[in-house]
Length: 112
Length: 116
Image (tube, rainbow over all chains, first blue to last red; front, side, top):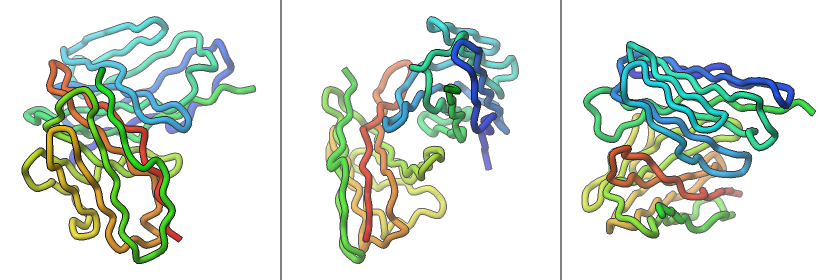
């Protein structure tokens, strides 16, 4: 079936270091969404990417959608303690108006 | 805007009893609501998609007679875990889709179910 693979599962960084999580889909996506779940909280919508090769920025966060619309990445510059939590990508296969295929999530851990 | 509430936030029940969880979109109409299950340190597992006024669509492996879903209005969906067993203990999260250019999902705060 359709899958979205997200790596890495965990990422330990020193505060101030950069962080990147990657998602790869087995099929072409019409769009991809990113969500952030803080410890003990629920997922919160961050952004949606639609166009091939699209790049969007939100402050220290940079989101990319691949040219083939099968992969995406989230890059955080100069991580802060407030960035801890799990980032999820969720891809919408072409032709679906609501079905999202979720990645497994990448948990960001700031080293003490 | 786009707030989703979920009730109760925590519930502890005895094995064999049924538990109902409510999901409400407070300030928008949600034609589609989703029910997820999340195990500790794991991703969201979609259980079912619920459209107002019609039967829910269950994902493969999810027992429809075990997890009863009712989407009676544009702002309310309920999930009933029938004859709960300890293995049903989990974090259940609902989300509601708002009709917009993004069709993004807004999540409720989740319900922690513990079955003794």
